[in-house]
Structure formats: structure tokens, C-alpha cells
Image (cartoon, rainbow, N blue to C red):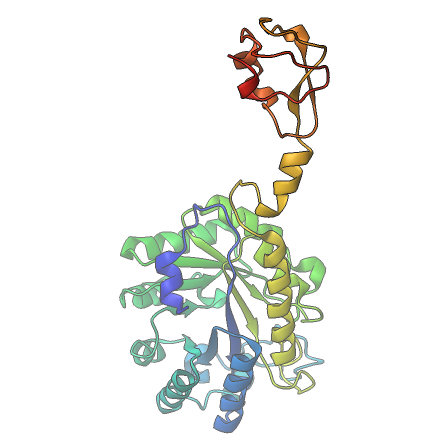
Length: 352
């Protein structure tokens, strides 16, 4: 399924759990190498991603030179946002076009998060849906600029108050764009105890007409956090993606690799098999139980021919091969057509 189709076919009002649309967030884990970028695309496709997402920015338009770090400096020792972003901002319009074509050839959807007006412009021809990062949730002019492309928007909500989310939603709704909100925690990495997945339920309650998802920064481990987010109603799951979690850098050590992604997909298959359908119905496999564990009306005593049936003539016992106890009111007052022995399972052809 393409992401645009998810917006067109998913109803937040239907009470069901959806197989999530999985976005492998490559970001800048290619580190400026097209060969690495393409390998990551292949790995993500092999692992089961529906889309891969990059990041498009220039350090000069993203961060001032004295912007401090906010990540684990033991994993990424760069203490300036500007210096870190400068290491990874070489991919621009030509590289994104090449990656778009490569993704199309493999059958995985291409995405990239724009961080400035120029990248928002050139990405328009490459994507059906825009992603806005948590860092821009208060950036009204940028949000409004993206909305003018008249495409669905995915907005992450990391480090945001309810008022800030409501405010950003109001800016987007003014333009009429379809919107998905992703619960997100801006800790790199996010400890499991800080994942705060319960916020997904609050987002669903506060924004009942919006698609809700989850952008994850926990360590992958057994991918249980993403699985739990799915069970809480996340329709989109986004997680950083790498080919080597031991590499230095801000987005490698907490990212999933293709094996983690395969595990997640496998776990989901098992989980959705257990979930089954989302409507009340008796299963075909329950037919023996319906027929043998439920009860029928049974003669409590000998009933002579011609007797008018009273409640005292009846009891209820297994199996459910005769008249259902739900029909007791219809049976009372009928006349026995023949003699009926005690403990006989009763059928309608015994009465008139």
C-alpha cells in the first residue's frame, strides 16, 4: 500500500487495529555515501519496510553555529548541532532524485523530511505525503508553507504539550490537509520507561478524526515497543534504520537493522493471527461447541399424548440438538402429539 492510499482508506472511527505502515527512517545514516544509501534502501525493503525516509537539510539553514547538542555524547561526541549537521548535509536535489528512482525500482516508497523551504520545494515532485519533524511543530510559517502543497501531512509530536499540538493541528486544518500525528519522545535513545506509549491513547481521544502513529527512538532489542504501539492503535510506525548499529553517530546505535525489522514483521504476523477479526461473530471452529455444549429443552417427566405443555414439564440439558431454551415461551401451551418419555430432547415435530 502507498502512504497516500492509507490516508484515503483508513478511518480513525473504525474500532480496529491496523497492520501498520512501516517507515524505515534512514535519515542521514548514509553519511554522504550513495552506495551506502542504496544499500540501506535494499536492506529496508528486504526487512519489510513500506517506505524509506531520508532527511533533506543544509546546516546553514537548520542550526546556528552555537546550537548545543541534545543527544548522548558518549555515542556521538559532536557537541554542536551545526557541526553535526554539516557532516551530513551533502545530499540535495540530485541525490534525492537518484534515490527516488532507486526506491521506485525496488518497489519501496521514497520519502524525505524537509527542513527548509528549498528542500520542501524540490521534494514536492518526489512525494505524495510530507513529513514534518517534531522540531518544527511550533514553526508556523514552515508548516503553513508545506500545507500549501495540498498534500497529506505527517506531524511528529515529540517534546510537545497538548496546547502546542492543538495549535499546530489548527494551522494545518486551516488549509484542509489530511493529517496523521505521530507520538514521539525526543530522547536519543529513549529508555523503555520513558516511551510513554499511553500517550497514543490520549492522542486518539483528543484527536479522534486523525490517523495516529508512533515514531520510535528506543533501542530495538526485541522490537516489543513498536509492537505495543501497534496494539494501542498506531497506524504508522517510524523508526531509524541502519546497516550497522555499532557505527558511531547519533542515529545508528538506537536504530533498527533489517533483522530487527524482519523480527517486527514476524511478530506482527503472529499477533494479528491472534487478533483475528474485529467483529462479533461465532467462528466455524466453534460449531461443535455450539451444538454440543449448549442446551436444549428436555422433558422433565413423562408427557402423555394430548397434554398441554407447562413450564413444569420442561428442563434444559445438553446437547443443543433440539428446541433451544430461548424458545421456551413458544413451546409452553403447545399440545404433545405423542407420548414423550422423561429426559427426551424435545423437537418441534413432537407438538402441535
